[in-house]
Amino acid sequence: MAKRRSVVAMSDAEVDAFLVEGKTMVLASTLPDGRPHLVAMWYALIDGTVWCWTYRRSQKAANLGRDPRVTALLEAGESYEELRGVTLYATAHLHTEIETVERVGRALLERYSVGNVEPADFLASAPKRVAISLEVERVASWDHRKLGGRY
Image 1 (tube, rainbow, N blue to C red):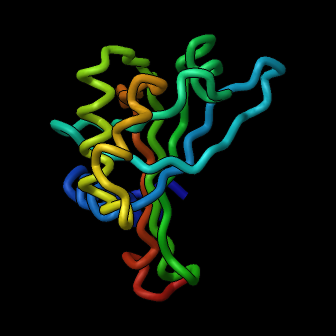
Image 2: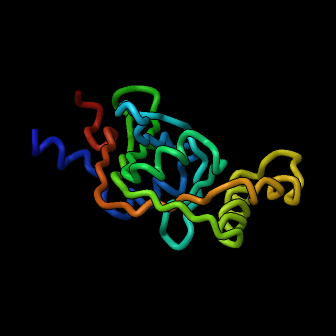
């Protein structure tokens, strides 16, 4: 199995490219009862670090305040031979400084071109939000396209 694993693993450059092209990550934090709390998150790469934001009073913010360990998943592919993904095992850091929160909000607005929303309207929620940076400790990746159609 280790040999097969090494065949499908992405290089650092491939992981970076996948993060750039990805659109939504599933972020897992831990609820008070120990169960995972999974949420779909928009994210931006700022100076090589994954950032997102959320409302300060959200369940995920409460979870991260209690236990900053997270797992994030990005995936793509419609069939087995097309499956690609990256799992990030990380520590989440909460940032409440308005300058940081607004910087993340601007990066998200730029990355996702949020419809007809005016930037000022999009950023109006920044005082109610917290920015989250991920300090990645370990990465797992796979790209089944490298198998050449073999199962």
